[in-house]
Every structure is written in structure tokens, then in C-alpha cells.
Image 1 (cartoon, helix red, strand yellow):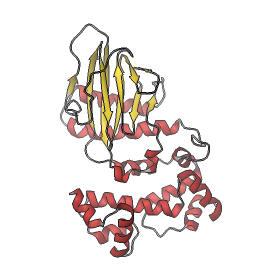
Image 2 (cartoon, helix red, strand yellow):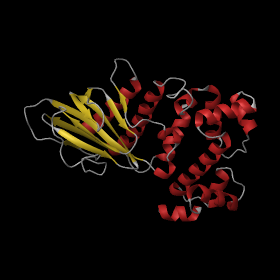
Image 3 (cartoon, helix red, strand yellow):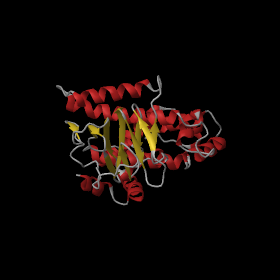
Image 4 (cartoon, one colour):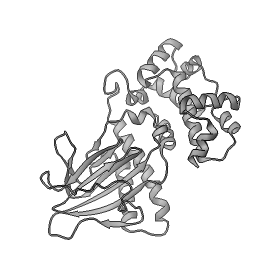
Length: 314
């Protein structure tokens, strides 16, 4: 898998500061969580165990070291037992407990078993959601396995240490560690997927594992402004034109030049929001020779002119 493509995807779709909290629960406890549209949430069980309850599914026991990631909007419950009622009010990413400057004890003192959970959320821009993220299941559960994904475990340890014992620089370190954690979670999930994808025919897990398609994707992400053709991308992939086009469309879900256009204009949307560069500079950076051509293409994809898009985001 080419992780530069994954890094590009995250940098484009992420917005704002990620949030996190270190929470200690004492049995009996049950907490409802909601992941809103435009946010992805996670839990890491640092101590003890608990149950994950999702409507329509069997309860799942979650143990120390397990990671839960929710890429999409939805609701779930964590509790010390499947029979413990959850608090009626859900905890959302806007809850004050999710503040990366504080350690929070979220349950009344009792003699019950202790569970310590590192939780948090990432703000995602729905208008720039990459198909790679839409391809993910509603829940990614990464059970703890001795010696498995050591980089992910190291990121978890560093993050929990900063939250437990804030020091000079903690407020700057935590967002960087949260972004690192997100990449390691996604890397771990993609690494565990079969090479042919979940359906046997396509999907981004298969696309990033396929050397030819991954090479073409990397070329597009490395030089989006280059005047790519199907033939030149096929050359990057080491295939002839027709077999390359068929394979790319099957795995990625759209033809090579359609994906190129989508990525250029998605990148342009991020640049409009995150920089004050003139429209002509942004147009050239994503492969358009004139502001007029860029504005027309941008409006077709985003439903508004680039200038209006930038003003709306201000």
C-alpha cells in the first residue's frame, strides 16, 4: 500500500483540531456516544474491559489494548456490562469532556472495576470526503495482539502519557499525535484486508495493494497539475492502456481521468479554505491553464464558484 496516498487523503478531508480525553469509569457505568455527520470517533481501552453495544448487533467484549474507530455518523454504547443501562444523554464530539487539555474522571467514585478509555474525535469535511473513507465499514475493531502493529501501540502510549501528565508543549503535541494515531489505525485496517478487496472485485483496500493501480494513484497525487492522459498513467503503472483503464476503474470505482479531475478539484477546495493564494495560482497548482476553465470545473463539482466557496468558508 502506498501510504503517501493515504496521507494526502487525510490532509484533504481533515479540518479543525482533533479532540481527545482520558476517561476513568468505575462499574456500574454505561455511556452513550454519538458520532455526528462530519466527525469520526475512536476509543482505545487502556485498562480493564467493557462491552460495545451497537443497535442491531450482538454485544462485543472489548479488552485492554483494543482500538475502536467509527469513520461514519452513528451511535453506540460502552458499558461495564450489556445489562447496565446507558446514560440517557449521549456524549458527542462537542461534549466538554473531549478537550485535549484535560484529564477527566467521568464516573462517580465506587468500589466497582475500573476501566480507563482514551477517546476522541476528528472533524472531517463532508464535501471533501474521499471514496477511500467511504469504503470503510461503520466500525473498525482492532483487537490487541502481542507484537502486532507496534507503531500504533507506541502512538497510543505517547498520547495517553501526554493526557495523563501535561507538560510544556503538550497542547501542540496532542493534535500531532492524534493525526498520527488516525493514520496508524487506517494503516492497520488496510494491512489486514485481503488483496482482492471485500467483494473480490474492487475497493480501495485492493486498489492500494495493487502495484499498478497504486503507482498510478501515487503519480496523480504527486503531480496533480501534470497533463496526465490514460496512456501516460498506464506507463506509470507498467501496463498497456486498455488493461490499465479496466483495472483502475474496477478497483477505484471510476475511470483514471475522472478520478484525476475529482482529486484536482478536491485539492483546490482545500487550498481555497486553507490559504489566501490567488485563484490563478490555485488553478495552476491543480492543472488548469486558465481561471475560467478552473472556475467552470470547480462549479460543476462543488456547486458554486471558487470565490464564493472561499467566502463561505471564511
